[in-house]
Each structure stands twice: as structure tokens, then as C-alpha cells.
Length: 332
Ligand code: NCD
Ligand code: ZN
Image (cartoon, rainbow, N blue to C red):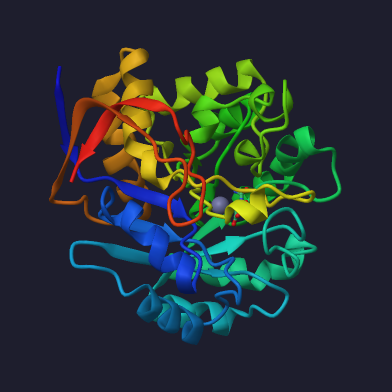
């Protein structure tokens, strides 16, 4: 097969940032995806209905692309503020436990404090996206240690739609498989490719450093299995998270990998290698839309089997797989 034509995909987790970086990275998302759920951990953050409207205008999406907006939950979020944000187009709210990742210093200390906010979200049909890592825990155990909180949320708010973002380990895959219909997960491209060895196994690879950390080969296999299984509980969220080369190649380097430019080509390779190409389009273009209750995209995306070398930098940002040869290319 030399060409692959699929329904135009959605990215259910992307960091577009603001200002100059936003302008530089946006085309890599819009060239492949019809919609993307834009994360609110910008500087300054997206917290209110006003912020959502301002940020949407700032994104100034080209025709054929729809940014789906989110707000960040903090100690200041109230049932009124969250409902107001929802009315102004935020389809989801993002829960960052305090300090677990980039710009999460204002994150949530105790999830129980947000009980009335979660109740309001359940009532109005707003999705809860969770960065599922427990603060102040050994880095490789953070995700598993947070599953208790997700269990509590799913039990307490049975109609609240919950997406556990960028899952990385076997425990979480099993948790999602056994959870109710209202709980799903996104999987990134880089967690299907990397293990911890690719971050610190020989030399320190800052461009592979991200949250949550890539884990063992067995964990990665479980993720590949989940993503290619055809289960509607798992769908694509790239977590493309650009930081400048200076921010990454630094003594206290930033977490996050800029994967947008290579997302669909790498996925085509992974699904093909698994002999599961028939599940690529459902994973990238159907299951997420169904979970969020949105119509599927009308357009198509064409991938061509044509080797290309990923540039070393794009607008001062080192993309995932920089300098490497990929076998599929997006036909733009
Ligand atoms: C993300 C970022 O840089 O905003 N970083 C990352 O390592 N994934 C934040 C996040 O999603 O954790
Ligand atoms: Zn993210």
C-alpha cells in the first residue's frame, strides 16, 4: 500500500502556547488535524470564559481547523465560573495536580475541594481531562499512585465524562479497560515509541524528556496494544508540547516533546508494523469524537509512503525524531 487515506483526524491534547511560539507551531497541527483540544496551561493560563474567548481569538485558526477550548481548574474555580466558561465554548476543564508538570504551580492541592465544580460539570456535560500523576511521589510511580483519585471521581460523579490524559503504564491501561463507559484515555505518539531508556539509558536525551515519563518496554507494549486494539476507550492526544531548544538543552530542562510535525506519519508506521492499520482511523478520527459527543470530521487526510528526513529544528524548536528518516509523509 503506497497511499493511506483516512477520515481527517482530531488531536485530543495539544499545547499551542501563545504569542510567537503559537504562530510557529500552529501550522503543524492544522496541516494534519481538523480539530484539536487546546490545553490551558499557557503563560498566562486560561482560567475563565474571558480567557477562553481571548485565547480563541489569539489562535486565529485557519479555515478548516477548529480549536476546541479548555480551562484550567484551580482553587479559584467555582461552579459559576466553570459553567460560564462552558457556555463560552470550553468543552473540557483540565485538572493538573499541583506542581506535576509545566505551569502547574497553580494546580489542584486537594481534589475534594472541587466537589461542587465536578458536580456542576457532570450536570452540564463538560468533560474532565486529568493529568493523572500524584505530586511528591517517585516519578515512575506517580501515575499508578493517582488512580485512586480517578476511581473516587468516577464513583462519585458517575455521569461525569473523564479522560485520563497521556497514559503511560500497564496499570492505567487495565484501569481504563475496567472502568465505566464514562472514563476514557488519550495516548500520545511518543509514549508508543519511547521507553525510559530513550531518555536516560545511555546519554541524557533532553528532547525525549516529558511528563509523564516514558516507562518500561512492557508498559510501552501495553500502550501499543491498547491503541491498536480497536477499543473506543483509547484515542489519540499527541500532547505535542513545544519548548525552545534553549529551554530543553538546559541544566533544569523543560518537560515536553514537540511531536505535532511527525504525529500522523509515526502512527501510520506503528499501526502498520502491528498489522493493525484498519484501527488507525478509529483511533485518530472516530473514538475521540464519539466520546466527546461531537460529529466526526468530513474531510480526509492522505498519507503517502515517501521517505523524508525530519528537520533538525523548526522555528527554533527541535521536533521529535529530528534528523531521522520517516517512511510516511502527510500529503498537504
Ligand atoms: C506539557 C507542557 O510542556 O506543557 N509537558 C509535558 O511534558 N507533557 C505539560 C503536560 O501535558 O504535562
Ligand atoms: Zn500535555
